[in-house]
Amino acid sequence: MDSTAKLEVEALAVRRGPLRVVDGVSFEVPVGQVVGIVGLNGAGKSSLLACLGGELPVDAGRLMFRGEDLTRAPSWERCRRGIALIPERRRLFGALSVLDNLLLGGHLRTKASAGPAWTACLRSSRCCGTSSTRKPGNSPAVSSRCLPSAEA
Image 1 (tube, rainbow, N blue to C red):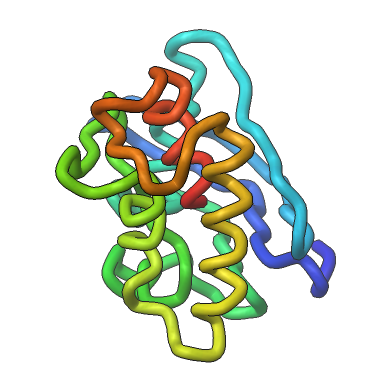
Image 2 (image 1 turned 30 degrees about the vertical axis):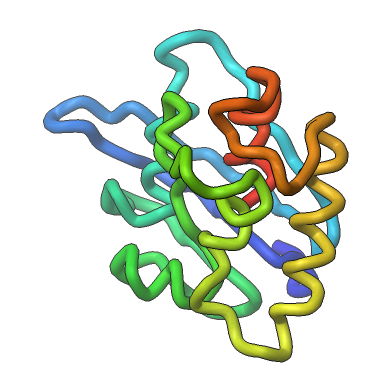
């Protein structure tokens, strides 16, 4: 795997009970790149993301983030390092603006990384076709769907 990659997943396997739902997945996400995960229903996309966020344990393989092995790290440690799982089904904070929902995921960041995170959030909220001050409940449906990908 490439040592310049921000996220490296190598031969990852995930179980849900006795069933191995992800088996041998490997990929890299270079610094500054955006990657999508596409697949049929039941292909393991949600299980893969739950594993990356620490909601499900790694059954086999390795997870590296910014050169650190997070394979066995708990979800709170992954979040502290910059990996967080955002709930599905648009469970957002309706009283907060789109921008505030985006920034909420970065509240553990250091002051040094807050500037780039703020810029990325503003850019993401514009890409979603919504005003960053608008509330998610009053935004077009695309806004609440894009918040998880923007926050990632």
